[in-house]
Length: 198
Image (cartoon, rainbow, N blue to C red; front, side):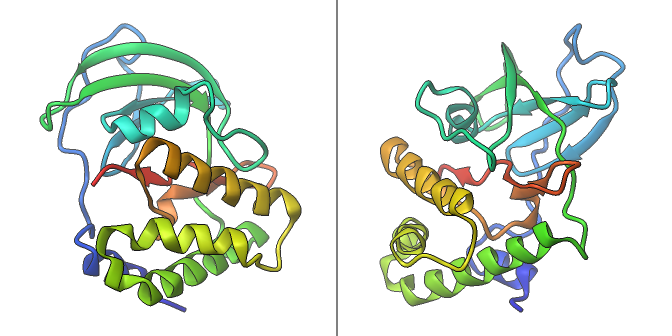
């Protein structure tokens, strides 16, 4: 198995978290923060089913709100776009999205096993295409769609939808970070936010 921390460090993205504070907003006031990533902050809505996600990356915003965004079993359900709630230190607007609550991968679950296979395959393909620089991830993801892995048809369709989205929106894929691969209560693997802008 790959060393995930080392792999992310090699591409200059190890341990980076969004430094911005949670903006003041009536929907967010008093809500506990339950997660933070490179481009997002997640707060618990309090109903056990939904979260508020503050996103600073245009890539994430497109992924969650575009009319032609990837949908289906392996992508998050989005309930509302509550608009811009501030501006990040990076200069990008902070968008507030209401979405289904997802969970970290349970280490001994089929979703975790599938995620690790995807990560391993993706990393191997990135290494193979590393001479392409920043484009290696796009090409690696594309090759995962034309050389099908032994997995369900719905996951293969999800990889194709993600690859098409990456090409259409000129964003980069990130399925090396296990936090970008989460699961539902029922154990379904979900691409929670597998894209970024270089």
